[in-house]
Image (cartoon, rainbow, N blue to C red; front, side, top):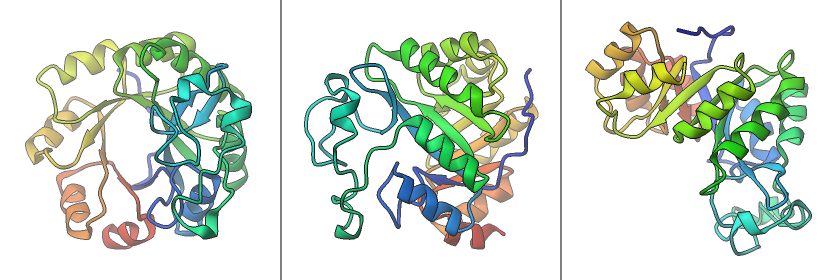
Length: 246
């Protein structure tokens, strides 16, 4: 199976330091670095005109002052939205960043990224291909691990950028996890921490996969997962969780 060419950090900041700054913004990524994180996790989605931006939801309503489906909004509309005011007046005017702006910042900060390919329905292959193409010029400066819940997206990423490592995202660990991960030539399993068991972690590690868990904000939970052998913990509070697990 493929191997990582870099070492995953123990702590990865979930959509940046999203307990302290608005998720999936440059402000959250800078705050993550200030809190000691060396990697972020964030979501890549396409605008109506096919541009990759850092955004989680299928609609604009929850985290911006816009409304409606992302798939209907071109970049000039998305780029003019306020993606920070919903979190705090201190972040009013914080924009939705493009993938390229994010990678430029990470290169400047010396950080890596777990980029979750988060396609709007029907754009699984397109989102993956655009993301894979966008990261290529940065790979000598920004370590990147691509992940997705969508097998179709991971297959398209493998075709577009076979040398960029991939992780299969799952909630409850399915019975066919190993077959799926092998078919997609993944190096990691990214698993919801809540239903995960020590036996499942051991099985994944024995099969040669890295184990990344999300989203862990409790110190005792983080310590237990590390004791089980997980490789990386994705958290909203990187400073606090980093201190808890050392």
